[in-house]
Length: 268
Picture 1 (cartoon, rainbow, N blue to C red):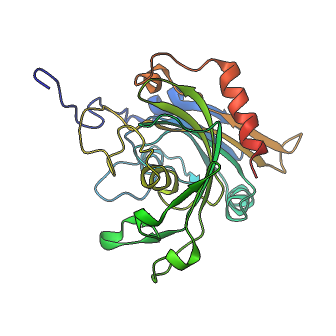
Picture 2 (picture 1 turned 135 degrees about the vertical axis):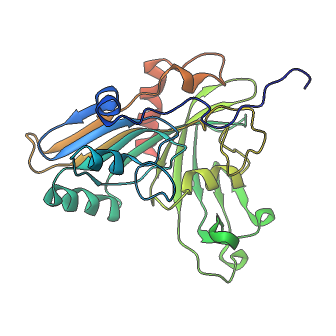
């Protein structure tokens, strides 16, 4: 379109001063954990040629152990342990799939059901890219469930992957979903949504338009058991900032978000 501006992802600089980033992003802290509301555009840990949160903290004299991971392009809740005992207790819950995780995503699709299940195994293809372990044309959809028959799965190694979703907000061209990745595979939400025809707006894996300043995927809520706390629960929320709602005609009200969260808990 004439006169349109193509934006580079994360054209806005991300804060790299640890004390400033920590203060602005703090969600919860005690002697054992630190929970932050991560801005999109900075890695959690281990990215080559990239500044990451663990590295920034270490340079300032603070040792953090990531309990889970979210992608660089994803904003929102990220939990760190400050001691190895807490790290072990919390990561076991992710490994056993008992951690209660919820994300929000703006997708370029309409007409989605109030709730849905994406039950599609993942595999790793060329250049280490995650993909659905079946040809795209063999993905089936019935009664709010996306799946592939065993006979249609590729012969390569694949990993069972399950995502539940509930619709939060609808607009003429986009929909906001609340999502629970039951299995938590690498890129699971991003690949599940894209391959079923609901790509996340601004996702660089699937959206090459360059017209969005960020990826509209947000780590929203976490629920875990934390034996050192009284009561022994850790319930965390990082609501998205106003920029997350930019593709929509309005932001979701708290009642709509709570309704979606409740719906997520009822999906089987």
